[in-house]
Image (cartoon, rainbow, N blue to C red; front, side, top):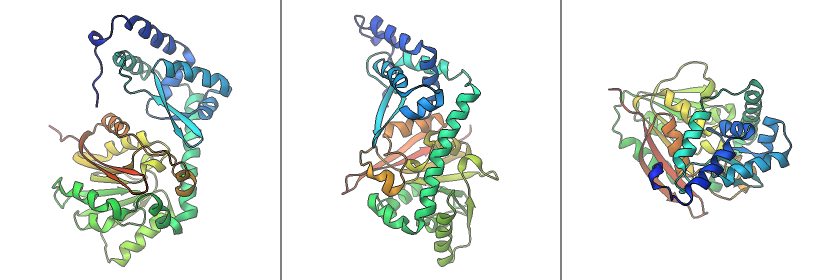
Length: 330
């Protein structure tokens, strides 16, 4: 990850004009609010227009100014364009931008804005949940369109085994699919928890575990952000799930809180891609993520980056396997 640039490295002939443009862009109250809500999330133009109750052309104008100043960047998700904060612009003003972000993040959001954001997140979550509810019987077929567990499962287990955790520990798999990895986790740890917000998918995981005669897996129906009872885990796996979630960055933050000190998170996820058919065919909310995004979100969740592997598929998708570690208490 590229470090923040210090003021001494700024080209003196360009620094004043660029800095002024950045400050002017962030100096508008509405644009400052936009930057504030992009703290850990990405929103489309229409979503932002709804949150702030302004017309789309006006919102596009503000986003253009923020983009030109290097304060936001965008990515295309099928026919939609989503905006998020810029991480690094390589123009010598990264420190200034991060200072602006840090200051804005201390400002509370108005209740109507919070409600607008919650409505967007709820709609995203309902769309994803409805897809899996209606397509549970076709899960493996849809999974095979992108990447099946057989293509990355061994690598996930390898990253887990390299941690050399005692078998007395607790493992949590979020979104276990049809449960393909649960027997491997059950063979390695004293307690295994499978968490899914789709009841039909959870039932398919239960069926596999019952078939294998495994009794130490506990199944929980729900979302990680609203658990009915507290969970503490030493190893958490999240395999091909993050791109289905309404709030991926907040999910990592919640995972960081569930992990015991010295624990680890193993993520299998798609790298960013442009195959927008995955939205409708596989229920994907996001077309993968840049490796840098996951690293930044994990750091914000209090996790350190561990080992990584990247697997290129014949169908053009690229899979990232990431290991993030929660520091042991001193």
